[in-house]
Length: 247
Length: 265
Image (cartoon, rainbow over all chains, first blue to last red):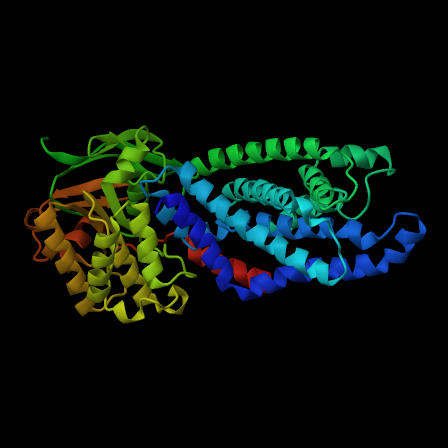
C-alpha cells in the first residue's frame, strides 16, 4: 500500500461519510434538469432543436462533476486550517505523490457524483447511446481530474475560505454557463463561441455529449486533445504550487 | 562538535518587519533529550517549523542528520517525526485510520504498524475507541492520539512541540516513560518544547532558553539553576526571561472560529 493509494482512499472515505454533502450536491443538477429540462423543453422543440433533455443532460452531468471536483480541490484549505495538511507535508513522501493521490481521490469522487446524476437523468427520460459508455466515462474522468487539479492549485494560494464565494461566482459559475452545457454553441453570437473556445469545460461537455450520441461542435478528437492538454497543464501547475506551500 | 544530529547556524526568520527568530546557532548531540524553552512568542514554533522543512529560513542553515533542510528536504523528512503544538488529525477518519494513514506515509511495514498501533493506543487509553471518528473525541483524547501517532514510526529525531499540554499527570507520565524508553533503546534524539518547567527539569539533558527570537541561556538544567542562583528551573526561567506577559498571534484554529462567526452574520 503506497502513499498515493492512501491519499486516494482518504478522499473516498471522507466522501462516503458525508451523506449530507453527497445529497446536497445533487440538488443543483436536479433543479437544472427540472427547471430547464422541462421549462424550456417545448420552446426548444418548437425552435426545431429536438428533445432538449437529450441535449441538456450531458451538460448537467458535467456540471455535477465540475462542482464536486472544484470543491474537492478547494478542500485543501480545510486541511490547512484544521492542521491535517501539516501531517502530510512533513511526511517523507514527495509532494508530487501527495498531490497526485489527493487529486485522483477528488477526481474519483467527482466522477461518482457524475454517474449518480447520469442515473437520475435516465429516470427523467434521458436516452443516451451507451455503445461508447467507456468514452463517456473517460470524458467524465478528464473533467474531474482537470478541475480537481484546478481547485487544488487555487487552494494552495489561499489561506482561508473567505474567497470561496468569489471563486464560485466569478470562476466556476462562468465556466459552467459559458461552456455550451445549457445552450448549443452552434448559431450563437461569435463572442460567445470565442469565450467558449477558451473554456476547457466546453470541450468536456462537447465530448461527453458526442460520446452519448449527441451532436458535437468541435469534434470528439479535438475535445479529447484539448481536455487532455488542459488536464496535464493544471496537474503540473497544481503540483508545482503544492510543492511550494509553506505553513 | 562531534556526533551532533542537529546543527543550526545563524538561523533567522523574518515575517515582514518582524524578526521571529534572530540569528540563533546551536547543536544537538545524538541521543540527547533537548529542551527548547521560552515564553510565548519567543520563536519556538517558528524554529521547529524551519527545522521540520515547513518554513524556509530567511537566512542561515540547518543540518538534520547531515542533510540541509532547504536543499535536501526529502532526506530530512525521512529522519524525523513530529508532534505538533496544534491539531493535525483528520477529524473525518477514525483513530485507527489516522494511525494507519501515518504508518503508510512513513513506510512502516504492515505487521509492525498493527503491533505498534495497538501498543500505543493502549498506552494513551484509546484502544477501545479506535474505530470511532476523531471528531467525536474530546480535546484531551485528540491530544493523546496525536502523540501516539507521532510515535508510530521510530524516527532518528523526534520533535515534540508542547506535547503534554492539557493532559492529566497519569497520561503525561505514561507518555514520557515511553519516550524515555525509546530514547534509551533506539537512541532517538528528542527535541521538545514545554511550558512545564518541572517536566523539562526532569527529562531534559540539555536546555536552551530563547526569548524574543534569541538564545539567552544554554546548559544542563543543573547548570542553569546554578548560574542563576535559583532552586528550580522555573525560577531560573523567570529570572532569565523576566516577568512581563507575552501576546501571541491568533492561531489557525482561533482565526477559523472568528471566521465562522463572520459567516453566521
